[in-house]
Image 1 (cartoon, rainbow, N blue to C red):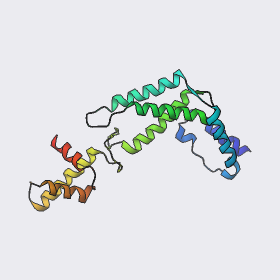
Image 2: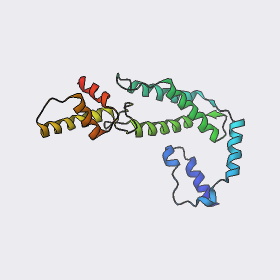
Image 3: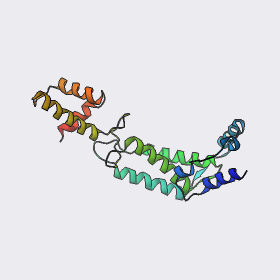
Image 4: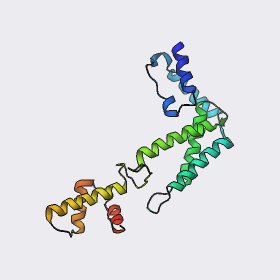
Amino acid sequence: QEQKSNVFEERADLSKPLSQRLKYTNIDFSKICIPSNLLRKYIGYSRKYCQPKLTREAAEVLQNFYLDLREKHKTVDSTPITTRQLESLIRLSVARAKVDLRESVTEQDAYDVIEIMKESLYQTFEDEKGNIDFRRGATGISAAKKTKSFTKVLQQEYRTSGTQIFSIQDLKGFYEKYLGSEGFSDVVESLNYQ
């Protein structure tokens, strides 16, 4: 019983970021896990009876994050931040409030969702300079990094073969050999604009 209260008190400490609050250490989960049938009922109840409304404070937090993200990442060659991201932030915030069976989405819910969104975006799209680069594919390698790597490949091929002129087939072959099959045309296009 004492272990249970300590776990829930730790999770309730809102001064810590969400990632810290979700970490459990040295806990016997068999003593604190919710039985699956009770969890199903809880989720069903939440879906049916809990319809949290976005508070002005939470909306402001989400709006500021969205506008900041949009401002920082509007470049010609990157994927734009659209209202879809804002809508997903709102849906996640509402879901976060539903978990606690609350009638309204709090500012803390908004901050928790922003933390989740940042982690997701940064793990997938952050480049070596700390900027978000939406041109990254499933590989997680930014277009800028691929371009730089491809330039090094071309320099290496130049030193090996002694020629400075390569056909498109040569370029594509080098690219596929060292960097994979996706993104070749984007890299060549970015090289043309340098």
